[in-house]
Length: 128
Image (cartoon, rainbow, N blue to C red; front, top):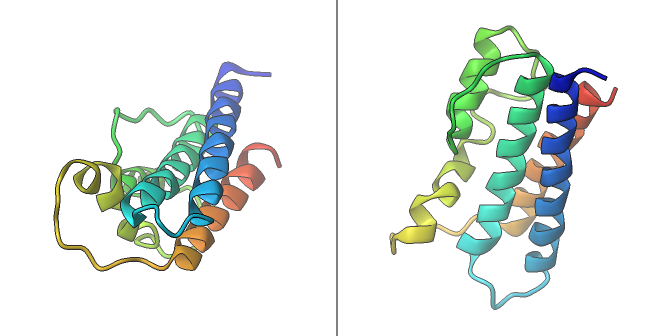
């Protein structure tokens, strides 16, 4: 197994850990959506990075899922979803963890759909 595939699989293992945290938080209505959204964003970010690693695409350290999607598109990686599909999760990476900003709550079911979409896509790409 090549190093790039090992790195991709490691990122997917980390995404699985974040999926577990995301799912656990969704069962507690008292948890603020910013905390739950953070783990949703982390899953998507790690899945995008896993696909980049799989394709041997160099990426900078970033939490910006739009930047990662753009990078994958530049390298002609096929995505079975609109390029801006995950944009709604970007604020959960940093802004909503450190700032009190007005934010319209995102339904947890919608977050779950994004998490599942990213994970299934990345697994299909990396694991086959």
